Image (cartoon, rainbow, N blue to C red; front, top):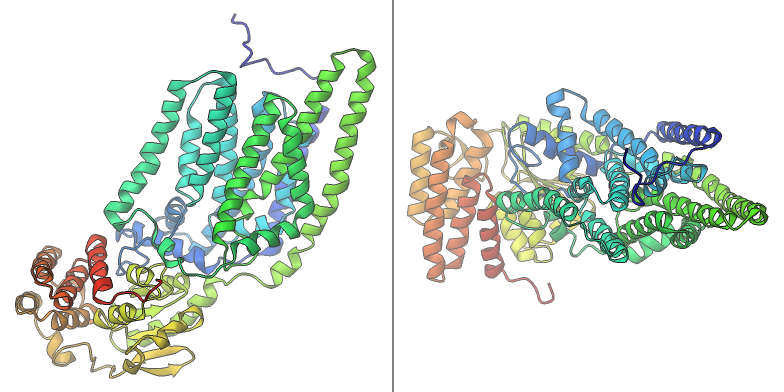
Length: 622
């Protein structure tokens, strides 16, 4: 029989299991309370969550990562793992909103017992009463419960934070295993700030190994391999498919005026007692021995990483969705502090019998103080639930109901693939599945995001590659009404909607020579006409022709994918020749045509918009 080693000590035996049983009961009660809290809030699936659902459905329909099967491939999401998980509702035949709502709750509740295991795993001990802090801080938080119910990735993010913590703490203690790399990699594929959590975990790893004077090379290599394969693999996919190393949302939000400092300060003001208890807990944990210091440091580093992201980003949504997955970490830090106090007290009792009662009184005093300060704060947090329930974030069903009329209008006009330019991408993408969507908020459109603040380039893009049959200029999209030369092409049809002038069931101004004439050629004749447009330098006519037939003809009557790629290559070749001759505008039109013929190929789109920025330089300071 092998003897236990210092890095793998035996679990201590308890004279009674009352504390373990009570702890398990309290953790289960927290999960049940959280489930009830979610049921009470009845948070609807928000519009941003529907964006991920739409992308996931397109993927499982075989159309790739597009918001609708006919839209361009643009990374209008920042949560690839969650997007794929939500997309599973399509092949499974499940209601997408119910599936997203339920999956988020399940994952968010599963995270609670895992957060409670940080202390036990770090110290290789049984769960104790202080470990219930994290589950109960989360269970009583309407912020946490709102966002895990919203269809957003909050529940998955919290579960991966909890799992990464359990695995990392165990592997730091034992020096064996590399599963933390898998959890951290999946976290990076769930949220952009996953890289910040990875940095925090790396700092703890290096500090711990340095203080131990032990380097576990094979273990570190295993963790690095997980990160390289999954995170590096996603970056390779991102560049290959989306022609960028950053999600499109990064560019779309560059000029959004969001006060991240106020965003974070408002949360700190609201939750000040809990934050103060967490800070005190982290400090006590760091002083309580190696085991509590590990969990305290990791909790603090994860809180710092998430807090930094919230401070840098801010948000337009209420109730602090970026902070929501961090809420259980406040309890983790509190628990590590209480564990540190208990560890110090246990050390005192080894000095003799006369220290036993002072040690117990000290532990009791710290515990009572934590409850005295913490319970009112938890109660105060819970009392906010009715206000949050009464005023939920923008539901995607509300947005979707608006676009039912747009879908009907497109059908009345005979459009099979209508081009629609509007904000609130989630709801419209769930209704207009056959449409090509231009997200005028920029999240799901490469050109809109990259030309943000450049009105001439934006107007040229919308007019030359469309125009859309319908514009919606509400809210943040009101800038459309100020783009030069755009609005004279549209007539107001009610609210914030504008329809292309000259559009009817029998005519479309985008069809060269009239709608009937443009739609008359068969597949082979249409291919010849497009090729003639390219060779004759009539790219603008080719753009109109392609927009017309793409809107009204079924796929079987359009050029084959192989022919379209050949035509796109021909247009690119002609565009390159013109660009060398400094004829940038004709070259731009040819690049645009090549991009549209090739189903919005991201690399062609990137090249097109780089040239558009040269033809229409952005204003100074942009």
